[in-house]
Image (cartoon, rainbow, N blue to C red; front, side, top):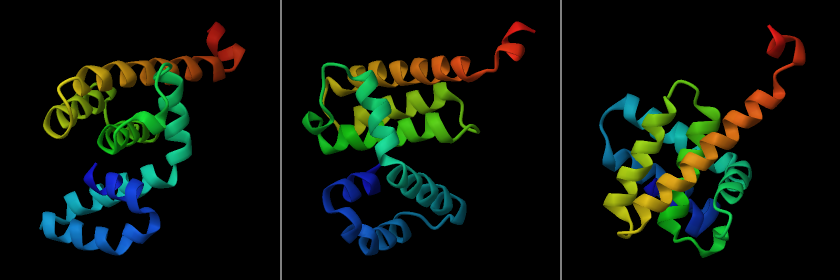
Length: 137
């Protein structure tokens, strides 16, 4: 989340700094691999993640969100959409916990509401894409 926030602020100029950040914050190769996968994956799919967030945060423009809340929501939206190996409840809970730790007092409730709406949107989209023959079985 911190790396994604840095990318949001600095753009591609942050990539060299991120390599140092990742290496300084973990000695575990598995943790490093996952952190890089999720950070760069979310950044690569940032427009799709932003669209999901915007459809869920109806009264909020993405530009009005703090960098921290935006990074939390982007990471979680990415994981909900593209990381099928992570249970959605875990993704949402982690988003809430990050909001408690890194953001404002109101953020955990906001993050929970937005991510719940994102998950519902994704489930609805999945149902709508099932071919009629499969749905009838």
